[in-house]
Amino acid sequence: SAVISQKPSRDICQRGTSLTIQCQVDSQVTMMFWYRQQPGQSLTLIATANQGSEATYESGFVIDKFPISRPNLTFSTLTVSNMSPEDSSIYLCSGQGEIASTDTQYFGPGTRLTVL
Amino acid sequence: SQKIEQNSEALNIQEGKTATLTCNYTNYSPAYLQWYRQDPGRGPVFLLLIRENEKEKRKERLKVTFDTTLKQSLFHITASQPADSATYLCALKGGSGGYNKLIFGAGTRLAVHP
Image (cartoon, rainbow over all chains, first blue to last red; front, side, top):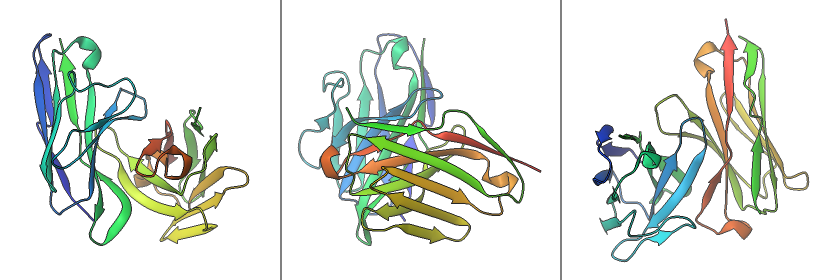
């Protein structure tokens, strides 16, 4: 199985600032995703991170607010821009499609973001 | 619109009993279904995947069934232990929802009491 790490694990930020979250996978994966999880709620897909091209965003999420990079098959970043308290959430990185298994999707431990 | 329903109320059971969690879905024809475990403050951990052409899958004390006619999956933990206490998430992928999108239910919290 793929092991996924995220940095930072948590942060407290001021309104109007931006935070970049890093996601590192210990093996090559075909697909990488970014999710958001509000307290006590389920996971909502923000976007699919595409290697070498623009991310594919879900309805309600836009590139200006959540720019994503994926320079290679094992690394991606998500930036939460111009933050407001409504952005306080857990952000989760996910990878799918390692060489041995193309279907299973693995998750990182999450980044807990609090915006004041 | 596509909808995944899991019992929002916590399931409380005695240690040693079998826990059964339910996942129902509507307006969706997934290619496969996955179950995850999530502990507080942690990311989801993959448990089992079952495909649309499979009726049942087992892994140690875990069993998953998938009924595409009823649009329902059941997740069983036999001989439950307090360490099994967590939130269990059902997630669907593929089919009409888009092949690479994993859509999650809200999860059911399981509490196993000694």
